[in-house]
Structure formats: structure tokens, C-alpha cells
Image (tube, rainbow, N blue to C red; front, side, top):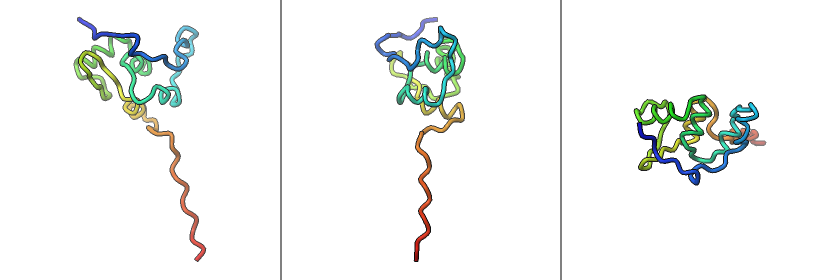
Length: 104
């Protein structure tokens, strides 16, 4: 099985990326949002507790249960799709305050 190219320049440093070695692998809503608009499949795999190979295999067979964007041999995952799959709010905006009743 041939894996798609992986270029370390395409993988920006992730927040607290070294935490996996220290045992702190919790992905919070804030940490996921800090990834930006899209992330690579290896990062998405870590969020869902999958191995990188398993995630690539599922994506290749169109069986990854989230949106996968393909650009040539590269896969990208929209962060909004990750948040939706985890039943988390996609945006961090609070609903607007209701308008006060008019004085008249």
C-alpha cells in the first residue's frame, strides 16, 4: 500500500504537540480550533484516536466519517467537520443578546 506524500513543511506546529510524550493527549475545543481552517489527516487521526495508517486507509476508501479534501496525493480535513463529528460547536461566538424591550 502506497501512502500519500508527507511533507513536514505541510504540517505546521500544532499547539502542545509534544504533549503526546508526556501523556497529556486531551484535545480540547480550543486546541482543535487553534488548528485553523484545515488540518492534515495525521492530526485528525490523533484527535479521533486512530493510527495515521488507519486514517489514511479509511480516507482512501472514502470511509472516514468526516469530510476529506483531496489535493492530488494530499488529504486535508476541515476543522469544522471535526468539531461537527464530535458534536461540538463549530464557532466560538456566543448568540447575540436579546434586544431590550422598547421603552414605548
